[in-house]
Amino acid sequence: MNVLYIAQKPIFPNKDGGTFAMQQFFESLINCDINLSAVFLSTQKHPFNLAEVPAEIQKSAKIHSFELNTEVKPLPALKHLILKKSYNLHRFYNASISASIQEIIKTEKIDTVIFESVFSAIYLPDLKQNNQLQFIIRTHNIENQIWKDLALKSNSFLKKRYLQSLSRSLELEETTLLRQADKIFSISKTDSRELTKITLQSKIIEIPLAIEMKQSVIVPTAKKIAHLGSMNWQPNIDSVNYIINKILPLLPDFQFKLAGSFMPEQPMNVKNKQIENLGKVQDLNEFYQNCGIFVVPLFSGSGVKVKILEALSYGVPIVTTRKGIQGLDLENGREILIAETPQEFANCISKLDENSELKIKLGQNAKNYVLKNHDSIKIKQLICANLND
Image (cartoon, rainbow, N blue to C red):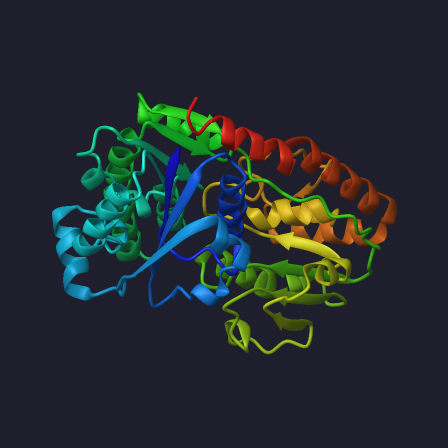
């Protein structure tokens, strides 16, 4: 079996939750009994560097990359808005790259193409002309739902209307692309249910994210909260703003450890002695050992949140929203604590800070959940079994 994997950005090195999820999936593919090739789009925001791809990966797969200018340009954006086309999607399309992908398929005798999200699946209609190919789209979330959530949150009438227009055009084209796939690999039951409603005939297979269990034991730390997330993603920026402006004022004795890639030196232009800006974390084990309580006030976005799963695997006590655990079978008071307002967050954090036994109980239940539902060995077997069943 000859498989071509196409991603809209490089997946090495690991820079955020998205690349983490892509790496886990790609490394699982390498362990299947297949001949694997990969195409990575290289953009200004996410440039490709072959030197950053581990040597063992380069030995196990044929790597291709193509440069693509995805810079947002006013006139094309306006044109797509008028035509009710998704500019977010079409920025990733290039006719020359499409021709190169078709040549790779021909030369390397590809029989299965896996698209990592609908953004790389923008090339599916061109490739669909070859009816001998099997097409699989792997979804991390329902992309248009992110824009719907942002529109709901917006207080500006014009911005709300604009975001609603973006979500509608993206929803239409996302649905069209998903319906053209032979299979869809979904990462959660929640997304699978939504995908079943909109895709009609595509075969949807739930394949959860694979998470390696951590052996470290978290020692409860007093008066500390933390957030980890890539700061080039709007929901993470909103979460950090929420912590700084709404939660911290209610917790004057707490220290806030802020970490993640693409971190500005002065986050949100706020000077606050409670905040320790760690930037990109090199040692996750050390970070989680000293983070205290992991706080994720997430109110927009779709799909499973990798940072939540990762924190669960370390056994860190977590306070988040119902949106934060979307797609995960977690229960308030069992593996995590749920809060929806600043005061509820402050109450949950204070409760955990004062109760070491509760911290330990939540942490152990969290690790048990990951072991039961996200075991990397079982999920790798699931991926291989569903490539050509």
